[in-house]
Length: 319
Image (cartoon, rainbow, N blue to C red; front, side, top):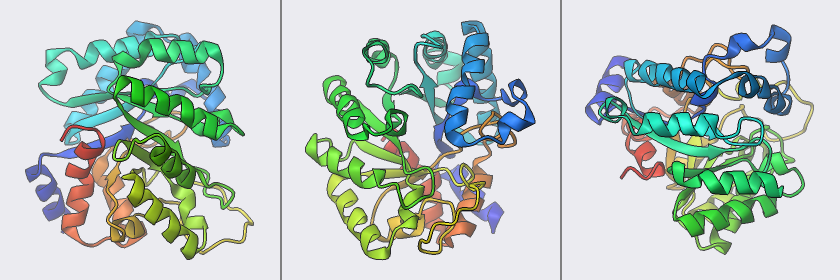
């Protein structure tokens, strides 16, 4: 059955990896085992080691290699968040931009670039740097958690850019698998407030599953009103440490089965590849899809094919 599913995906145009971080791919060896075990938010700072020691040429080689690895794994479209901040400057985005315009790349894979900052967007310096480089990207990327306590202001900044530059917006939300997070709800409300219905995608939304069913249903309705789409990265947070919170029984993955039942578009991504976040993830989208279908009991092959192909192209603005 797996081979039949894979064949249908190939027939539909191949895998779409809707969310990755190719600029730090294959850098796991930069970090000790102890560093690889650290908590997510600590790793946001640890990756500065890659940024400070890498040249633009290093970024070109790194991204180029993983693009060809993706092609060999049957991926025909990939979206990568690329770091832009005061530490890395424009080395990574310049490398990605150049590669995305090379015919040898364009003729083999759709390479979609999204901006990324782990430093937040509140400070004038980070705002200036990001704004100056938005035109090099196809999509504006966002991480409200980088501006802890100012998530709404963060979204106002990036949504203002999305309006000004007429670009789609992809936002990391609800990553930590805790009922304390309600970022998907905030994102949907802000999307409507800014009139960006149908232009915004929530990446992860894992913590949705921590909330009671009545709340989840309210968020699904709100998301539908906002035209919000979703990207799940099944293996990204499956290693979440055990907690003592009292919450609905759930696993550490986007509640994709419920999103589908509410007619919401869901695509799939690998997230990090061979880096400090996921040292052993190789970007194999068949592995990610298999993990998704088992975790969420999605056995409808047509739904799985759409998640792996056309839904990805939709959230990337390719169709």
